[in-house]
Image (cartoon, rainbow, N blue to C red; front, side, top):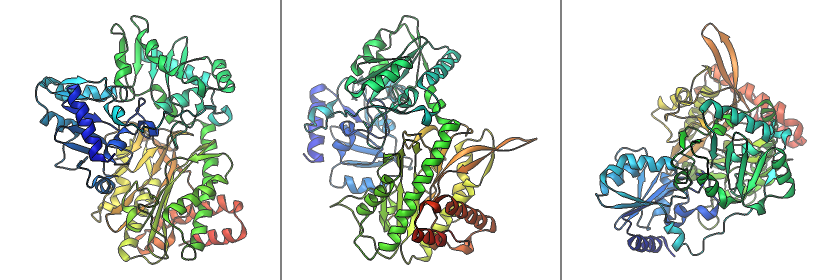
Length: 593
């Protein structure tokens, strides 16, 4: 079934149900960023494979909204589908809620699947278009009714993430949560987000590719804690661990029964951006709902000393894998057929050699030449899969899930001759990276306060990138983790000691090239003066930055000093894990400039 046929099938169902417009978000029942195949309804209905986007279908219109990371990709994948692209954040393109407000009339109906649609988005719709007399219909999964070959729901086994990695038992974390519940006046805490549940109960799984989580719900009261999960996923070891830590296991489908039977007068704390409409509606009317960021989200964002120590170890292993990969590339490009796909596979092979490696932390972005201008490009056999040559640049954004941490790193590798424009853009990207990673900032600063530091060298030359500068990183969890970020978007979360975040400015020129340099850092305390406590970043990632891409004349003395010191650390930390030829090569790649 082609995309046009799928849209027509959806329209026929909409007509039967009396639905004027239907929303298909990128979501699952837990508001996850990355989805198990079973929940990729938006991908199936539209053919657009990016990780973010919303489709709205009416009798006459079909529109996809996505952000700047995916504009180039979306234009290519939507071609001939009859679906129009609306570019989020670009003047002249309304948001999908604004479009619905302008195009729906009184008496129209708006449909969506309440089991995957977040309550917060429902409230925003009610505020913006509910006053027009538009009725909401939230009980139908219309895409599921026509998706005849839909993949089955995932059934991976859960496993315990041991305290030698986590630093705290599940029981200790639950007690921390209860203390925060008391501060908020809550009797219950309802959790729908998979990474929060995995962190809280010290369990992991393989239900979502690259995201070691278990599809489940959590409910915490002052005297009990429940995990709602398919019992087949829980073996005796996990069951014993959870029971010893005060967690009762119930069937996944029973969560709605427990929610509906929360005691009268209870006060339920939840994050309405990460609880679906269906579950929210199940809360008894005589209960008070207290809304805010998940308690667990704020707690897990600040890594403890054990987690940081483990995370540093994971990055040493990851750096070794990256160095071996880049060395292999340097010695073999032009001598054997290496494609974007086979290069990504080879990098994964090097990671698999490292102790404690589980899986990649996201689909590797291996992008040669102009493909790198697509920020979240994915090479595929038979579609887009360049063969690497001794020319131009190759961008590799990749990461791993290890028992002792989650990694994420990008290097843009110079394979041969590059233009002056490419070298300038590479150097400007590096200047932005150094400007932020070397920053000292006053405690209380947020991501938006710091974002400009990375962009400024690019802004001076009239360049920018249509994405954030950095995101939080989980601990054997999602590679994208909040609540903090480094971005020019609104974010009031202060950067606290122990928060892990990426720094990844870039230049992306459609049809030409893409450049990104990314390291992961942890926030640390710096000097304390009469002006207050200052903070800094400690680098976790260790891998050479390609000196062949740099116009040294554009770097200041301070920038050269930072790069030379960073490269000395790269050599010191990684060289002992390499053979003699690899060490010689690394010494040259980390030479002083």
